[in-house]
Image (tube, rainbow, N blue to C red; front, side, top):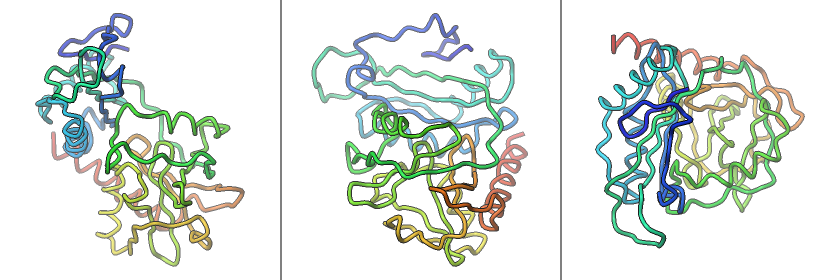
Length: 280
């Protein structure tokens, strides 16, 4: 498929990135993944807020705004045939010599990548990972090029249907390989908080807002696997797959249509439809 690279739409085979780009040399880059609904990137303002925070932490200067990104998405989507897609907006620090120069990056490399959407899975399985979640490079985890912890842990998972769930070094639940994680116990929705070193998911923010609006009690915090005993539902969320129930977790079965997960899925889908209507 074609990609958008610093203002041009080009073939993948023609894309070139300098070996002196600090996104390559030192991992100084941030990215966001999102999908489109009828051509519109859902929650793009929230994604841009998060990537701008990450760029600020790294000293990467870019004036990316929602209008510009929507135009990029439209142009790339049309160049690739017009279908909705999975998009990755990537901002790399740009070219600089070898060495740890802390001065701001003023000429970043901006890319927008697209790949075909696949239908969200009806269910997922899950397992605890042996490899522990590493601590963020700074006080808050950024969605950055530093992704080896996830890739190394992925080797523990036998199949794509199964999501690995990270624990911290002190045995507290953190997040999935590519998702945030939730469980329901005695009618309360539980999820790890930011102190666990997880990425604060854009979809997670929506899930918790929907839960509170629906009167579902929510508890964020630091929880061990033992404290989840007695959970009646488990589910995951991310921007591409939305909200997906976990039906098998370490040999234990859970419902595909649990009441809390089903209610939140329905409300989330209503939001995507309202978003589409509001921008037409």
